[in-house]
Image (cartoon, rainbow, N blue to C red; front, side):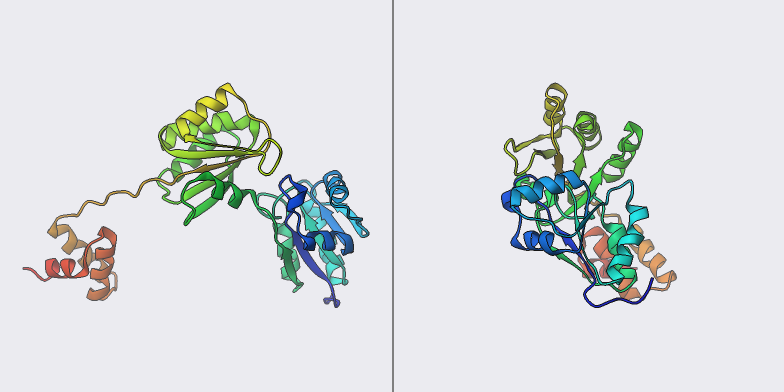
Length: 283
């Protein structure tokens, strides 16, 4: 790949989740002016352009999971040659459980500018509507397709204290909710959001056990985002004085200063530093 030509850059477009009215003016302008528009689904792009009253003048290419590895070098070459490449997925921000990461990485690797016309995100929209804690959360994307893989992943997440956000396919949501209820507990609060911003938008805010029963009886359609409350903080029992002294000594033996060792042990058990200090210095 040659040196960058002036003007070449990659622009990530945040597409509406379903309601075209959520499209930004920057998205409209970029779709109309980009030299190349790489779309996850070219038919959906055509429909979006019609809804927005935009004429796409650049070359339209498909860019989806099945061809992104092959197509990325072509698009990076175009950027280095001076082309403005716009990347748009079926909805939401590129790279968030959608194609885009490879192209962003490829552009950055050749020193090409990468920017965005930010737009809607199913992750933050569902999180905000869920009624669950939003100050700390983690996005887990799609769970593994097989029941065994899914349960293994959920067991690894069972103690996660941050709010969890998942994507799930309609034909797998009943099984996923049943496993979530079994692993996390049927009483864990959750919210199932489907068809966000669309005509039949629905947000069900119920414990996992109730959501599992609902999904089994009413197989949902449409795109689903699941928000699950984090695990309650684990209660840490104060160890006896001998254990505290042993843990401080162990950290000192590993190279920590006594001050740092006492601080670390106090933090681990939620104790005041002076309390651990007094234990260590009591003979």
